[in-house]
Picture 1 (cartoon, rainbow, N blue to C red):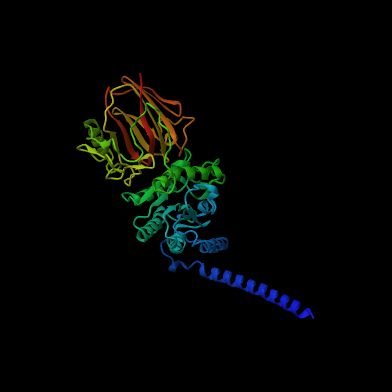
Picture 2: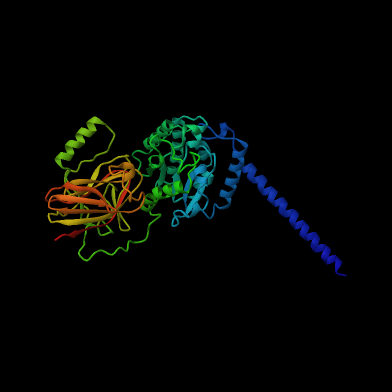
Length: 453
């Protein structure tokens, strides 16, 4: 009497399994049809679009994954790229943990492929920001730098049209090797075109990830790129360190307040909240003369605004031009849209007593800044790449470094993380403390003076 119900259960289970297989097959067929690569005539942009069998499989599989996690990735910081981006993993191997991220990298993709999938894979996420790394595969397919940059320009225009205020971080093409059909001279041309298309646009931050990784010949280093194309864990860690300060300035990382405890005798020059006590001062005559010589020698190479009268920023979070901004305990000298822009921010007070100036700074790759001691400049840069102190053993790229400057009379002794920078730098007897901006981004925090007996 119990046989019929058992048989019925078996039949229903079998039907369920068959239906499941059919649904899975139908879903796969839909995905295969939906994510088929169009003919060239139907594609936007110019240049190569890969169609190898292996690439079409990766393209379909990745884009099916993107479709599946689209709702979960709404409002994320989107990373758009090729195998270098995909290789970081959808979990980014735990990097940038406080940042909500979406990996939209497809191995083997070209700029034309990224342009064609931009709407579905990126814009439909309504991203908070977009990080771009692209162009290396185009070179292998024989594309010229102008063609590659043209597609990137189209991508940037589409991003800006989608949201005129959405930050765009444009990473320079990583170095590789002529052995990989990616010669250094071509990559340098592409990166110059990237800088040109971003010049003057405050929505775009160009990150110097070429200098970050290139050896003296302009090629990738095997210690970071074992196959001279794809980074290993060390390479990804350097990329993360380069990105973190930019993402922090954009409000996606390092959002916690600074709980540093100051020494009892410390005179705080920066309150961590706004630019009270800081100002623009009239550009000195000597600096005006240097500016005139530089601009005559290299027209258009640098933006160097003149200041004709003092301007105080008490109670203001940022200077009107946005170059200096107070963010979560950091005084940020932001990346200039012009590529290079020489400006100085000064304390409202002058100092004529002996003192020790203490501060910490963090620089993006190849960034150039400076600390002025009573008007005399000490270079403060991403030292290992930008110099002049390239032999430091304890400098931490992309991380915070301690600068100590001891001033007695008209002599200044300076160290970085305990290593001597200058043993005896002549400084004026009286004057303000200043922070200069040139290229890249440099952040300062915990800026204070301690009086010396």
